Image 1 (cartoon, rainbow, N blue to C red):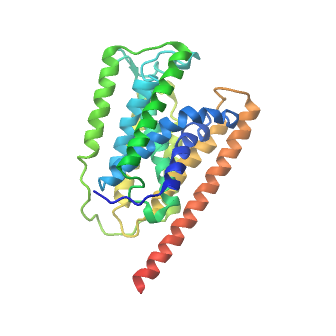
Image 2 (cartoon, rainbow, N blue to C red):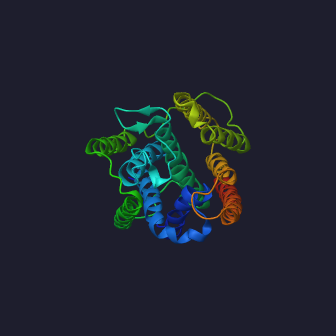
Image 3 (cartoon, rainbow, N blue to C red):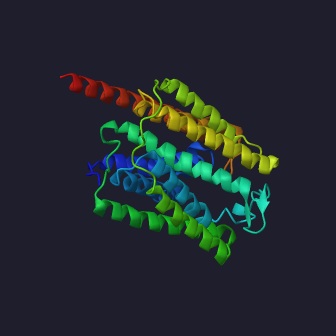
Length: 329
């Protein structure tokens, strides 16, 4: 178990960055609805903190955090909003479950696959990576003790219940008992799997890791492929997303075992993902509110994301220089 280094500022930052990435940078909500953070921050931010704290305290890294992010997808979209099962989610007749529908499970494979991507890689992964880069000296250690994590857990549960209440008030949908049961069971299974992943990998093939600019560009291009996969392709879209996800994970697994891989590379992956969200937001119609407010929000969110990436990169570079000097003395 890793000893925590208390960092309340980092905790508060992640608490708000996660919902801002998940809903506002994506372009689902405009900034004039920032009041929604009262409900969204405990659910998204609380989950991101718990995922990071649990993995880091156990001495685990990104494989465990990504699997825990997948478990959160089933909680958020299967048990709370229940969008995985709702044929008319938000009452807007989007028919999200129609592409690659699986009657036996009552889910749409395309929508389910998309949600796993959005929450695992973006809502949780990008948010955690960005905030860890802002605090490079404590990036691999817990930021709270067990008491602090317990408080966050209570906040998360309250936020989750509030999110469920808001969703139910919108269209009074409740999934079947069987659907809720298998979503909960699979989520628990993924949580267990996260801690069965080996803590350390054996040395990989010799070679130098590519520039962070290259890994960031790869993340950006693959992120576009995921978000722009046409749902009308049906099972073809599901297959395409699976291929893109597999390619991303294989490339990261390969590059991360090369000499020179470090915090800037991890940040570059998060930066690529954040920029995909920020640019993609300009191409979609707003779910709520007017178009003008949404485009203003899109511009502000993208500008803030770029600033946050720049700030994090400067901090990582400064910290690496200090470590290099310390090792030479």
